[in-house]
Figure 1 (cartoon, helix red, strand yellow):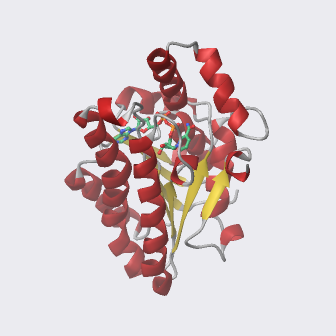
Figure 2: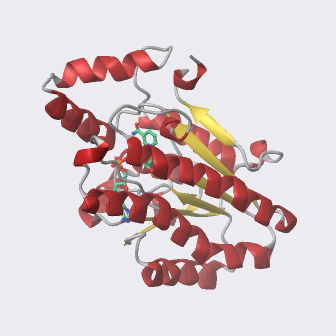
Length: 258
Ligand SMILES: NC(=O)c1ccc[n+]([C@@H]2O[C@H](COP(=O)([O-])OP(=O)(O)OC[C@H]3O[C@@H](n4cnc5c(N)ncnc54)[C@H](O)[C@@H]3O)[C@@H](O)[C@H]2O)c1
């Protein structure tokens, strides 16, 4: 029970990595607040939680709405007088060549991946500074480290998350607050499957062919399961990572090692 009775706030918990993280943190005894813009998916995550369910609360939340994010974080702090762990996980992907990339897709990427991460941290940072402990975890990506075909705008948002995380780590260090990111490689979630489906359609090849390409990027030759990313997030949330700040934990099956 590595996060027993820690107050943990997690965004983007309706699916994929967020869902696996919610299930793991609940099992590890956290007082867990999960949110997502997708209320139905969020309810499904809640229903899937067995161990530790009595300490889990869920609420619909769009991370691009600062007033709503602030209210959610304010309410949690008011109730517990602390936030131990903040996990800014909500994210979206859109693929396409730059010349064809619709402006609305670009805005969505910026708004959710960058602004959403910023808003989630902006709402919680005053409390972290006041309490002078805690840890913040953001979701970057292999796409923050390397170029990926057809992903120019997604890559730019994730490189932005990485820069944001490192800079925030410097600002928060004097307050005893650690700030780190996780960079998953290809992880088998609805996001990756929709990404692969769109890419296959755009390139006129099959889902399996694109999947194979993704699998071959990592030296382990397979996609990660969302649970394998959740365990990395858990590590960063615990005192096991007590000397880690401003770092990025690459859970990419060796993708960026090539
Ligand atoms: N799956 C991968 O291969 C992979 C690789 C690297 C990084 N990531 C990152 O990991 C994180 C989780 O991705 P995933 O693969 O689990 O994706 P996913 O699509 O399965 O889950 C993302 C969740 O974010 C939610 N979300 C989207 N917009 C939101 C908003 N405005 N407000 C609140 N919630 C919102 C979605 O509803 C969804 O439940 C993302 O930040 C993603 O960029 C994923």
